[in-house]
Length: 403
Image (cartoon, rainbow, N blue to C red; front, side):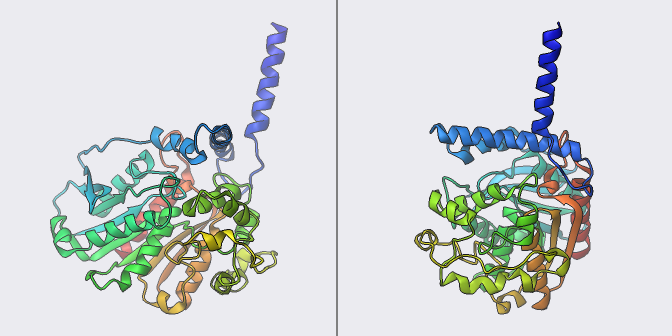
């Protein structure tokens, strides 16, 4: 009996040691986040092992979580839900059941997951879309775009662009009883990246007659130049998105080439030509002082990397929307940008908000001092967090007032 108690004590100590990570006092529900993060880390370790032994690609193993959280389309008394395709791209459409007078709003939503994971069919996205459709009396189009490592940039971008362009046709808007003056694009993380890119590029498409009214971006990933911003340094080991995972997402978006990943991790992937784009993401200029803290700016890269030269798209503004000049920004619709203090992507969103404001775009930048990356999707039991509920509530409230 005594030996069993000793063994149990040892296991308990080891488990606590694995689960515990120091988290800032500003965060609520810290132990809950530690447990959730421990589960994520365990899956990451398993993915690393399966890739090492040649069983599965790292991201293919990580997709287990996406599959586990997938739910079938199910209508209820508030929302009609259907899976269909828009120009051969799969989408899940949520339509309010109530027959209110007048035309509806519409939100085209792109899920997160680093262009490698995630799905419109995951329970958190399903819940978000239902809630948005019911509370806003809006048609929600949630895009099921292709993912890496099977598909790389620009496939993901083309999928969401195709859906947005298809939906903005006047006959399609009529079919869904949508007001052509009240259409938004939105997304979180990698989805925020795709929403921002589409908002920029579709303005120049002569075949598109209907304009996007607003864009709502939740902790978007927006630049490929500098992976050593203050937020990348401050939150290098923060759950749920440590720097190593975010940089790997960026690398996989473009290629399975491990040399690119190595160069990106060292922040030495820029070329002599691409270093000229650094002005667009110079955080010593574009980042508010409260985010710069005491960090010192160093021009990223050595200009000698070969991997990013061989792999197209790394510095394409359709992949990195911060890499465009002010003239292009001036034409963009009103924006909502949510950032989290404990997130490697915090500074991407903050810099975009600053640059949009300087270009004359109306921007609401809402910064959540006590939040972390991924919180927006932690709204379903047992991984529901109060900060996630708060972020979703603020997001829907902004859409209600501005769309």
